[in-house]
Image 1 (cartoon, rainbow, N blue to C red):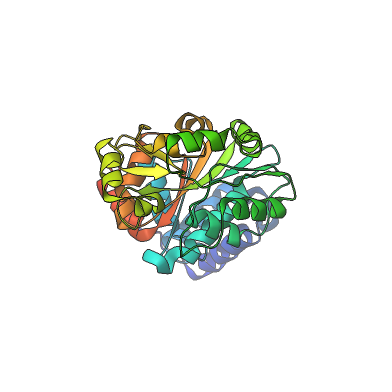
Image 2: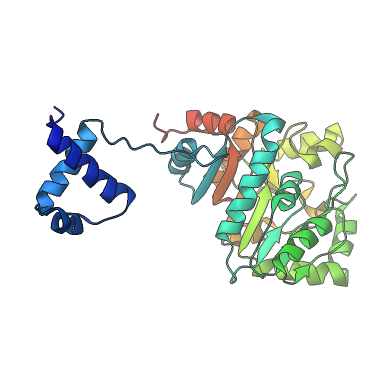
Length: 317
């Protein structure tokens, strides 16, 4: 039952609460200043809370749903998780800003940053304002689409200019017509020189694609037969041309040898991988990537977070 305060004690409790909680005075200093014991200071603070005189409110930073972020982080055992309000394309600016802020917060001057071609990664770089002076490495070739006029090289160069460090880029499509052409491309000196730096990457930001129409750029440029062949290989998602199954295991598909970029082994070897992904159609792919430890942190939307929480056996309301 809340403690009842008389008028004089209420005035004293209010003063103690204000000086301790707002001004930062210690309980010992308050006891000395007011001529009372520190135990009475503690009792007055408790009484102020119980009576409703003091109310503590935790307000989420603008653009971040801290409650969902914390619950999803715990449910999926992620290192970092940032959930922004909203869903669909309307949430893209918020997702990009949150991803840029997370990267800025995480990156240290000891890191080597890796970035693949991805629409979500490109939008994140647009929102970046600062990075420590670190190298930036291109992780994959680019896909040319009518909706996007930026390439992997553009993305890495823009991030490199913000970081003020070196950048390592190469000109190549992400997907070539056949394995022989991709092998020739990978052996070209500029391409080989850039890809040799992938082993140095300690921090990467990637997009996740679900193996379905409209949710993977690679999927959308293939023939129906090629799409079905990748599905038969067990792929449910891809990241920078690395395909994975429902358990997050990297799978070899008929396209794997045609990709110019990092390998599944190299992706797994990166110390910390941040994924930017949202949308109902991507929930299974995100869950698979988490299940397989392909990603360490996630930036997503409230709608996607709710779906992931509903599907997680470890989630709590």
